[in-house]
Length: 511
Image (tube, rainbow, N blue to C red; front, side, top):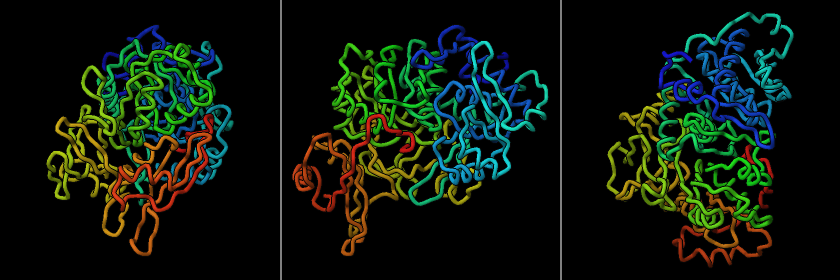
């Protein structure tokens, strides 16, 4: 790492050389480990290897991996050489890979040594060169090879990773989608990512003493930014799950073995851990002491938050994030800095936030409008999508498409997506409000309200529910419990029973 590295780039915020022999990446279950300094060495080495295969600054590189050391090194190496990393879910079907690779205009596909058949088939159809990353041993280091002999034959000798990136260089490319639109491409610069990382570190006061266990997939901005990059940048330790995927059965064993101090997840994973605790409870002495638990990426019902705090004896801090903002926008604070209010997503963290009316004017405190933000973490715009940019970026604000309200202390409560409101005969109903009422029923473990066509009202409220194990209640029982919480027009008219998720099911495809 040279002295000219910009503090507003990924190499700048990571700066592993300065963190030396402190543990950086650890694979649970006795897997390999890398100190921060070793991680930096591997990033530089893989960066040089990628350049030798012809990866150039500005090239977009698609990555399809589970949560492994190989992915972390490959991702950071791509960004290090001023190329653009585009991680995708390795569980996608071939047609999905084809769409995302083609839409992003990718130049290379990178996969682990065991391969990703659907991604490789898509790459073959698109004539995209495929590279393989492996980690045979620490002595040999992380290796890059061509999937075909032709690529290895064309490999040129390159001695280093080349010039360091600059803050305006694009580093990450992800897709996001609304409820009615095709996926939109979101380019994020080194400055965007570095700013968001600093905001996350400041919010939770992350230090080199912190250790987190990755449960979110790293192709998702939540896991990538909050779990991985913020922890590494603070000098802390990232524990990767054995096999590269979350398992509720080994979570607390791994958490205790590595003495993690916090973790972050979507509500689905929190609920899976709560469900596992009912069937195979882990006593407090077999769990580490957590500073906090973070929840993000979808609404966490207050009833679930209370269960988490009671069961795992740690404050649960709900946050609010979007891909366009390089993840975090708001969060409930650590207890010593103020109340964490169930049902809210906290206060703005390093950004400017406003709730605006249709003329982009701030609404009075307590009134509902569109949540809008400004900040150096926000993308400059969607890729090749002028229509979407025209809607989302106006008057200097990024319009999230979410409805919400601010209280007198600046805490934000989300009331639903603008396009997801259920319109029942002119009455606008937030699905989130119905979800929270349903989840307050002791027999309900998961719930989601949605609009269903109705001849009389145009749309009617329906709900899908998952019951706790061995619970037997009817729709009438649930309605009787929630009718004091919701107006009559908001009550679901039909319930769709769903089977509970298995606690070790593959949840990545749900995210």
